[in-house]
Length: 259
Image (cartoon, rainbow, N blue to C red; front, top):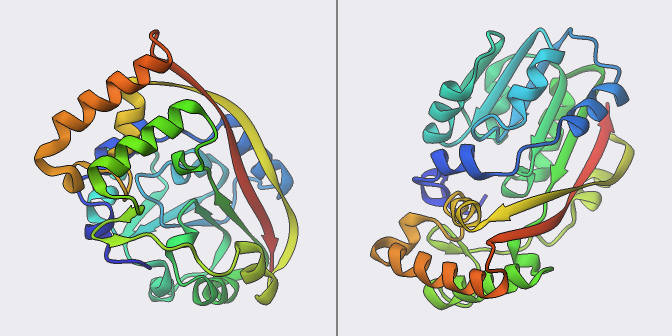
């Protein structure tokens, strides 16, 4: 993992809860149907953040546990949560064994790339009950620059924070191996991998809010330049669409695993 949680996502939790794209209900239902989840068993969410995946999946299990390395994220998760069957723990995925529990299902929603993936997969395999399942999810990023508004956004980010993508106080580095390779080398069976596609409409407010939820363009990194950054980005986005609406075809890549 690059840096510490407090370094990577310091001050982002409230923005994370409000402005990250929620997982579609249809996607949650697809997971439950694929694994025939029946409302029993125990769920573990690795790198749970503010509970974007833990909370919508919680009705499908008796008990749920979300772990994360950010106390800020966990505090907001607790505030967001209205379910009685979820517990939150301040713990990195690499130390999940300290929970001393077994699980029927494990998920990692767009956080797997921050982890020691080989070590985490081995611990997940050991912690799952027989025939237990695991889902790993990877989402897109504004850095893909698939749309004009994303290209303009990245240009403004680079102007204020440098040409290389930040990750807290360090520089983001792509993992050498793809998730598929790591999974193939593990003891898990890869049952299915595909993309779940849906459409989402952004506004100037939600784009800025999303950026403030990230490790590469948050208020901690921008410091006293936040206002100037927002002003410039707003002007650039409105040049593209004066109505302030920006469409994105979102692709969630998912990996369905089984012990």
